[in-house]
Image (tube, rainbow, N blue to C red; front, side, top):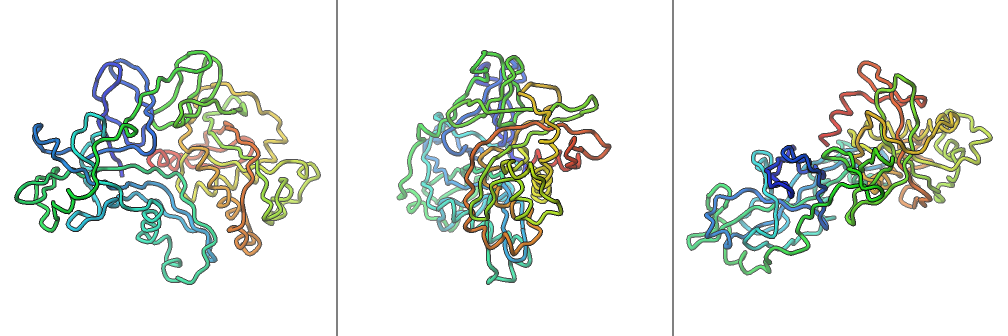
Length: 421
C-alpha cells in the first residue's frame, strides 16, 4: 500500500510530496535536507471538505496502520506474511472498521499544532491490534487448520506503526464523514462527543532535525527512507533515533575492482545459553550444519549477520542464514577495514532494534533438525554483547547480486521490491 503525504519544507516553505515511510526530506526547491523526528508514531489525517470556520468542530477518529512482516515458528515450520492494514483505534457503532483504500487514493495531511478540532482517544491495546491482524490474515493454511498446533515463537519484523485519523463532523442532523460529506447513519454523535476527546497534544508535534555531521559539521548523505546517514568528510555513520543522531560502529570489506554494490548488514555478537551457543563452532554443531567445525571456530564468538535492509520475508530469512553460516569466510579473508564512504552504498532501511528481534528466527531458520532447536525457542534469551554495521561487497551477475567472498546471492528484483515494504 503506497501512501503519500504533503509536507512543507521548513526552510523555504515549498510543498513536497513524501511517502509515509520517508524520514529524510530533501527539498527540490532549496536542496536543504531535514530529518523528520517525532516522539512515538507519526500521525496523519485524511483531507476533509469542511469550511475553515467549522474546522474547530471536527472530531478525529484514530485508525492504527500496521505495516510489516509477521513470522511464526510452529511445529509445521516457519510461516510468514506481509501485512499492511488499518484498524479502528476507537471502536464506536456506526464508524467504519477500516479506512479501506482511501489512504492510497488521496494524499494525507500531517497532524500538527495548526490542526484544529478534537481527537478521540485511543481505546485499543496495540498488542491486541497486532494479534487481530495476524488472525485476520492467516499466516498459512496449516496454522489456520491446526488450532492445537504448538506455537514456539512469533515476531514482527520491519514494522512501522502510524495513526491515520478519519475526520468527522457532528451536525444537528447527524454525524457526517468529513472526507466524503456523507452521513454515517448508524453513528451516535452524542456518544462520540461524550468521549474524553482532546485537542492536539504538544508531544505529537513533528520536529525537523538538521542533517549535519555532529563531528565535523559536514552535510550528511542519505535517501528518503534511510535510517543511517553517512558523512563523506570524516567517514562516520550516524543512526537516526528519537533523541537525534548517534554514531554507530561501522566497518567495510573493500571489494575488488568489479564491485558494483555494497550492502549493509547488522553484525550482532551474542550468547545463547538456552541452546548452549557461545562460539561459532557451537552454532555449527547445534544447528547440524554440513560443516566440520575447525579448531579456530571454537574461539570465534557467535555472530548473527542480519540484512540492514528490508526484503521479502522468505528472502530475508534465507539471506540472513546464508550470511551467518558463511561468516567464517569473511573472518578468514581478514580484509575488514574502518568505515569509509564509497560509491554505491545501499541505504540502511531496517533498524537495529528489528534486527535484534529476528535473532531467534534466524536460529530457527538455520536449524536442519527442528526438534533440536524449535522447542527451546520460548526460553532463548539472546545476550547481546556487541553490535556494529558492516558493508559487504557484491558483484553484478546479470539478474543477481553475489557477495564476495561469502557467496550470498540476492536477486536484483527482490532488492528493488524491498524498498516498497
